[in-house]
Image 1 (spheres, rainbow, N blue to C red):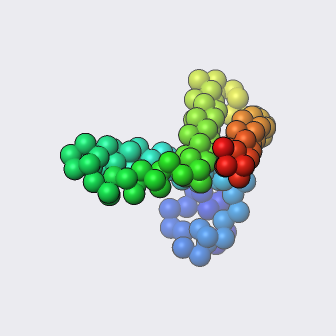
Image 2: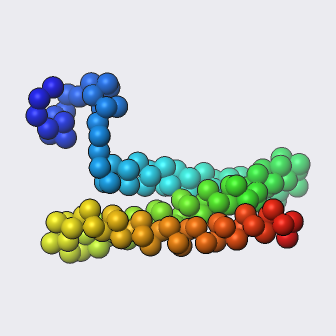
Amino acid sequence: MGGNMALSRRVSLGAALRYKGKEGMLNWLLHRISGLGILLFAGTHVVVSFFGQQFGSDVAFAINTVYESWPFQIFVYFCVLFHALNGSRLAVMDLFPALIRFERELVWLQWILFFPAYGLPVYFMVQNTLAGV
């Protein structure tokens, strides 16, 4: 298949899976996954609140145990932080179209901000969990 795959509407599944996107492709994928993760957390929270309020049931307690676990909290923190930083980068690029020329640099800046903002709290969460705090 010659030419630019992005300009073609007839792309086979195999060609799509072999597509080697750059930083933007990873951000696009993680933005969707993080959005679904936020939706999962919000939906779980609503379901737990409903069951707890209406029935005071063990179902609510079991689901509550899952979404209050530290692995789930780390996942939700990843989703919220990444979604916020990536959305902010996209909003800045929409407000200042001249910055689109520097998309790659902005993606790297986003990751430079993300890693310490994510890594330090996660480190302390895991450390406190393993220490039994």
